[in-house]
Amino acid sequence: MAILTIECVRGDIARQPDIDAVVNAANAQLLSGAGVAGAIHRAAGPELAQACRPLAPIHPGEAVISDAFGLPNRHVIHCLGPVYGVDEPSAQLLAACYRNALRLADRHGLVSVAFPAISTGVFGYPLAEAAEVALAAVWGCAAELTSLRRVRFVLFSEADREVFQRILDGGEKSP
Ligand code: AR6
Image (cartoon, rainbow, N blue to C red; front, side, top):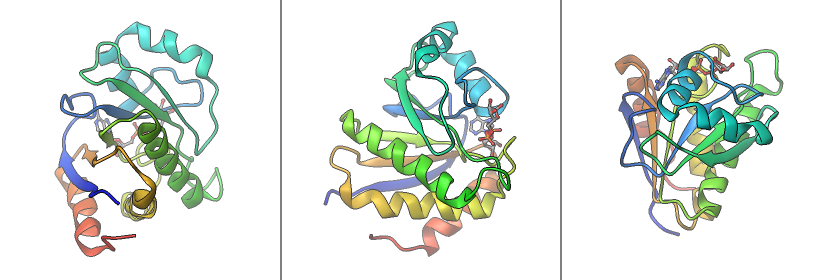
C-alpha cells in the first residue's frame, strides 16, 4: 500500500492550485449555490454548469466527475452530502460521499484531491461529527487506492480546521 498523506488546512476550496481535483459540496442538480458550490462555480465559470447538466441529478452519497474549466485544477468531483437529520442514515451517506469521491479520483489516476467539509454548511451536519465520519472514511479506503497520494481537507475557518486536525492527530492512522 502506498503512503497516503492527509492534511487539514484553512482556506478556500476554489484556490487549491497544487491539487488535481477539488470536491464540490453540490446540490442534486449540480448547479451553483451558496457556500462551496457558489465558490466553485464562480471560479470555474459557466462552462461548469453546462458540463454538469448531463450528469445531474445525483443522489445523497453519490459522486460524479467533470472538468474544472477556470479552476486551477484538472477536475471537479461533485458530491451530494446528506441533509442532516433528513437523509438517513446520514453518517453512512456522508461516508459514501468521501469513499465514492476517492475511488473516482483514483480510477482517473489522480494523485491529489481536496475536500471541503461536506454537509456542514447549509445541510446542517455538526462539524465534529462530520469530521469523524470523513476521516474514518478516508482511512477506511486508503488501502485500496493506487494512484492517490494526498488528501487535503480545506476548512473555511481556523476553528473548523482545528476540529479536523484534532481528530486526525488522535485517530487511527492505518486501516
Ligand atoms: N472553501 C472551503 N469551505 C467552504 C467554502 C469555501 N469557499 N465556502 C463554504 N465553506 P456548504 P453543504 C464551508 O453549505 O452543507 C449549497 O448551496 C462551510 O463553512 O457549501 O454540503 C449547495 O448548492 C461549511 O463548513 O455545503 C447545496 O444545496 C462547508 O464548507 C448545499 O449548499 C460546507 O458548506 C450543500 O450544503
